Length: 541
Image (cartoon, rainbow, N blue to C red):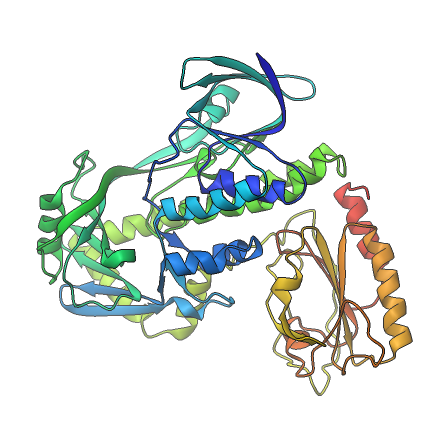
């Protein structure tokens, strides 16, 4: 039997499901297969950072995720009974200033529900066996749980099937690999600890670390490094009790083990993220130590970068070359993540006297420096990720004379940086900018500064729609009161909060990409660069 699919996604984990949802809401229903079972409860990843919560909010899922998880606000470090430092993760510049502790299977369940609402069907017990590239797609062989074979012709094949990716291997894509020689065990237990349940707690001992995180239902997740790279295959209560007793002042009477696993920290990075019509995302493209909780979050951001571009190509609104930007933008990001987690893991698990003293000194110093804490909090929340060097972004922005109402210190997000949320007003009341940007597509935000003339605003709005050429919506933000005559798409910024956060001194434009990064900004009402942006993107109305 031979079937056809515009897009075939292999892997129904967080990365594959985010991509499926993003494609489906843009009119492309992908085929999604997974070799596992629907009731599988993989729970290694437990942390959703601020940037990923913003992404989930864009998909309409952030509030549901928060209700199912445990919001965390600080990261505490100890050596024995001595508190070394406290990191405030709420210092991130986000509408979700927190880190959410939630089992991976709960995150997957939320994403599956939304994917199915949008018409996506997940085929469990179905695996990729082989693939053969063609001129206009990929011919793949599939194997079903009941032993049936199937040939599928797909326009685009997406590997979101984990670190041991069959898609990557059968495509012949090589990767750089390294073994950190660090073993870890992790599991969820019940225990009576007098610890505040709104934070991470990390304990450093002479032989390694123990980190504990609050989980739903009153349980605690324990992550412990092992003295060598040969952890027990299935850790038991005795293993966790021994490390807690050895490295922390906590009660070691753990009980009711819900789930456990072990692994050796290894890192890898695929040599390329795109090979013809095959694309890799998530752990299939990169894997690294779990220290820092970046793995699942980075994979979901891969999907968020890829989704809108792939949808434009599949629907015939952009040339295939647009997908080259996926690797160009994401590979430097994931390379930096791999390097950072590698360095952090080595520093956190170093057991020599010199390493322990250096770690203790660094943490104590870090705990006293607020600017350093704020930057680390933004890095932890993935708010420092940018695409400023991408060929897809540009700006015509000049330092102009500050107005009496402006914040001189704020220069606004540059082209390639993440947008900033603000509250505006329309006739119905307050509205968050991030909610205006939920509609799939690009968004052109026209900051009118002090312009109040209705005819001028209407003319600008009409020119903005013409420049957008059907690629998205236009929003006009004025510092004045709303025009007397009702105008759709016009919002008031009476306290100048939006103008200040975006560094606006005079009428200006911000073109926001579908993944909520600035594609273009200009500090004049000149719409030609907006049209040029879409020409450079290779898109068609």
